[in-house]
Amino acid sequence: MSETATAVSEIGVSFPDSTFGNESRVGVPFTFLLRDILQYDTGLESAMQHITEAHRTCDLILGVGDGKINPKTNGAPFRGVQYSHSVANYFDDTNMEPKNDTWHARIPNMVYYGMDWLCPNYSTVLHQQLLKLHGTLTVENTIREVVPIVQTGDLHIAIYDLTHMMMYVANAKGAGEAGPEMAYDRAFVQLNMTELFMQKA
Image (cartoon, rainbow, N blue to C red; front, side, top):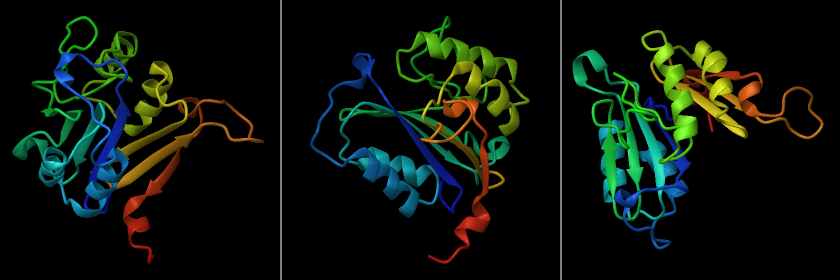
């Protein structure tokens, strides 16, 4: 998440379909690309251009959001990205792929991926929880009713509220710590990103 209310996230793809095309190990490592987006891009459009023009490598799903975009007047503030050496395809709620009415059905004003591209088990549960909370989704009920039920985020979870510049983070149990093991079952730390970005380096 950046001080320009831009955020990016990533998950690897172990189960792609043919639409991904080819992978390559020659190009910009995706972690460097994500870092550059946060440092140099100021919003969704510039991040999308950065991704499109990059020398991409492996199969991933990215999420890119822009808290400055008002969805009522300026369109979708978030895109899911099908990312590989061959393609950079951008999805909003109207064209989200892969489209499957059984396990990856579209939901108005939402783009979601359950752990992988072809991932019926996680995607089905994620769809059910998001549909149940549609129109009332908050950080609090995401923490309570989405991540622990879907069981996504065993090592680390970050939830971005770009409108209010807040980040919520949970990590798996560390050595010598008490409590649940998985990040999705643990307490979240709330970070005021406006205040943090005002700190001198």
